[in-house]
Length: 219
Image (tube, rainbow, N blue to C red):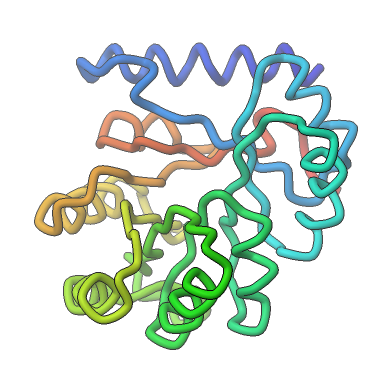
């Protein structure tokens, strides 16, 4: 049952935060609803969840537009790769875009924000494992990229996001992301998923992205 699973995840986040000397409400749970139906989102909302994550712009538009039209309160995060040709739809749909990862995308987002007047909050995705198949800025390039986002494009970047390699311990990647954020004065860290979010909280995550532990195994 989604409400039971959601409550269990919240309790684990709270316990991890307290063990680290942090307030439980310093961590935002992003319920990752990609591939799950609108009914599951509604069940989570009924259990008090208000922050959701989606991987694809088109899926999010179809799933959440009716809720927006009905005046339902929620916050929507894009946590999957964003193609430049989907920027207009993404800016209109998402409250937070966590996957800013290249200069071309930064320029496209800046142009659309200026055009539309809508300013989603932005995180830069960092490829902490230097995996060639994975999106994200290389760790050694993040400082310069952030400076470009701020100084050239005037983008409201407020945090970093990472997805550690599946076959490596997550903690060193979370620690690396925390250090990059610290030296760049960024307050938000999106890191940790269903299998490692407690480790992420211990290392300073302000946002954890949890899907299957809430909604069950994906088909």
